[in-house]
Length: 313
Length: 313
Image (tube, rainbow over all chains, first blue to last red; front, side):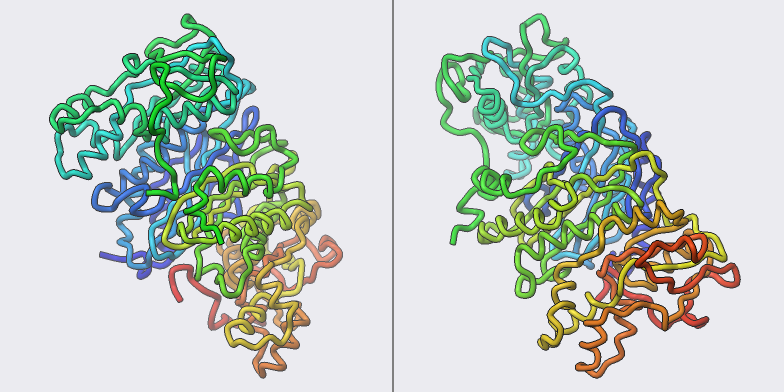
């Protein structure tokens, strides 16, 4: 094993860079003071930080998994504006004792997630640190269409999701409890697989509010409710539960609905659309907006819990 | 004292966001899945990561200093392409025990550095971590001019710098040795003050290669030499030494020239320009490019040391 400290920064970059995906929008790639990208329309930009033992665990996730997740949750953020992702900036801070092979395989995961979408890594930074800390900034472009925020939902519209929920939470609980019941949901926890393009699809169907579900359906829906100043009523029986989650819950003898309602990290899209007929094929209507109350209710009731806080447990 | 863990993510963001600078290019600011920015010309983008006790020390730097430095070294990267910075993405990962006031004052430092340039913070992310880790991604625009890379210098051109060197290194050594001789250089180590716009100026004067000096003149010059496939000969007596560094060196009874040659972190611009008459006012010619050798020499000699490695000491 060669550590990144033994390898040194320049050799590490030289080995790492060729494994990174190349952006279709790239005019000048990594290696200078800054990268240069073409932008069609306006620039859409978002960032996430991933910290070892908080956002991923080295004993659960392969380096490829970590790279995949770092990329995919960011691609979802651009899709969640109804925009098209084009490029990533990646910074990696890590202990000098980290196996250089971990960094190479991390790059492979980034590439696997990004390449099908024409998204590339155009730059970044490396540093020593006491724990692994990864920052991803994703950039995308609007192609002249209006971005869809969380703030423009109106009362009397329909609420829909682009995929089945609860898989990531089901995978997480299996890893936590050391019981591998359903490999698909474990895989979806380690490598979320939102359908990139679903957000753009909702935007083209006239979505008035749009976001990806990262912190749980209820918490994220409450953000749309607050910013749009509407109430959102969710019908629990209509929330699509991932089949693997349902199966794992039976084996674990627990109720899977909290996974779908508060689990998060599936990264499927949550949209408000003007009417039932505007909902794209493959999406599921799960409720409606209203002016009868504010915030989020489930079957008319205020839920007990919404999700988690990033500085809390 | 209220810690960020006690305050919680939502309250922290609510208190932090109004202190951040607003970008002139902002179409949609923080608070949604992604921000939206206007871009005139092509997008120029760069990232840096700053880790506690590696890139800053809490006992030396105020929170405002850390915010200033995080912003300024990134603005310099965009200027170093001959482009104009417009916006930052900031991620902050920190222990739950961190004083929330630290985060507020960090935001103030970002604002002080950015506001004079119309640069704003358009988004970011917060997370818990065991050490403070800050990632800055800076975006800028070309306004239709060609970015200046490190790769197009030709033999027989002149090499110039936009400001006096060695101040940051002089400040660092005073803090390390616990001797405060010259407050200006200590201040410049904690808050680098490159003249943002100097890079654009060099670009408009026909610079063939351009970068900011972050890792030391010799190491950074050797990057231009390698990428442009030229030799660079620096005349030591022409390298402008910061007056405060000269003064501190006398008191410390050391030679200040290594600070100017290998110290780094002054973030002034290093440019190759086609001829003496193209050098902008206020810049200092320090040498020439050549095809007689490759790499960097000082007064015709290969130097003993070039600078430092980010995973090394």
